[in-house]
Structure formats: structure tokens, C-alpha cells
Image 1 (cartoon, one colour):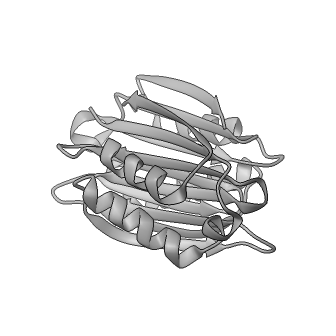
Image 2: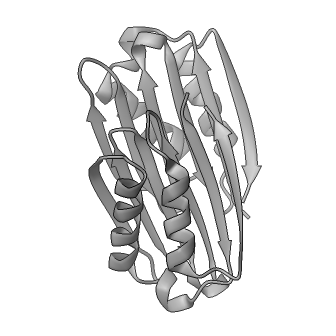
Length: 108
Length: 108
């Protein structure tokens, strides 16, 4: 059984949510801290703003989609195995300084 | 507000769930049928079995992780905008012939 965390962040800085390379580093660090292995990462910066990063893990995936103009981001941290994806969520929350967030865990 | 469908499939064929290129086609077709645009797709075939496919969409993402030895797959179809991700889920269900499945939709 895997654990899939759905994390919605609100009230984040435009600049942080629009920084593609910062978000790549953040997701890869969160994956490793969760005990996962990153196989491949892809990303896309949208115009006029917004970023998506997807990390393919040996243990499933981690992703972020951002809407900087709304200060909003949607994160998924889904891992199977012995890792602890909650640690990855905690790192992302700590680094993106949301005014508020909603975290939900689904076993699957 | 986006719609994130979490689809768990059970009792699927080993062969279907272990066919990387078939699953890439399936996800890309499901994305287009949902009204989404595929920006980039990555995939990984694991040893001794199992496949992950991630499609980065202009409207978020679609993913599948398979455990052929258990006949099990976990699919996410997450889109923002005017598309209809439920259509993509229906296509995936129709093509993977699960004995049973669980479909959940989360607004985010």
C-alpha cells in the first residue's frame, strides 16, 4: 500500500512559485528526504506565469503545479515502499511559506 | 478549480500492465480525449516488472503506476480548465479491463 499526499498551498510568494529551477531543486530534495529515488525530472514554465515540475520516482511520483498570480500551488507526493512522504511535504511547506495549506493523505 | 481523479484498478492483465509503449499511448490518448494538451511524456519500465508513465499537460498531469504481478494500477488524471478528465478515466478503464476499480474525484 502506498501513501499519496495531496497538498494544496495558498498565499505563497509569486516569485517563489514562478521560479522553475528552485521548484525542481525543492521537489528533488523533498523526494530524497522522503526516502525515494529520482529517476527523471521534467518541468515546464508557462507564459505569462506558472510552473509544473514532475519527478518520476522509483517509488511513484512527486509533482507541483503553481499559479503564482493566485499564490497557489498543488503538490502530490506519492510513494510506495518504506519511505516517509510526509517528510517531503513538510520540507515543501517549510520552503514555500504558505499563509495556509491543506494536506490530505490517501492510502492506495 | 481543477479536478483530480484518483483511479485505482484491480484485476488487470499482467501483459497489459507491463507494456510500456501501450501505456504511453493510452495515457496520451486519454489526455487528448479529456481536452488536455500533452507537453511532454516520460516513462520507466522497472525490473522484473512494472511501469510508470507521467504526462506533463498544459492543464496539470496524468500518470499511471502499475504492479503487473498484483494486477494493480494507480492512475491520476488531474486537469485544470475546461476539459473533462472523467472522459480520460473512462477510456483508461475501458482499455485496461479491470475486474474492479475505485474512482474518486477531488476538487483542488
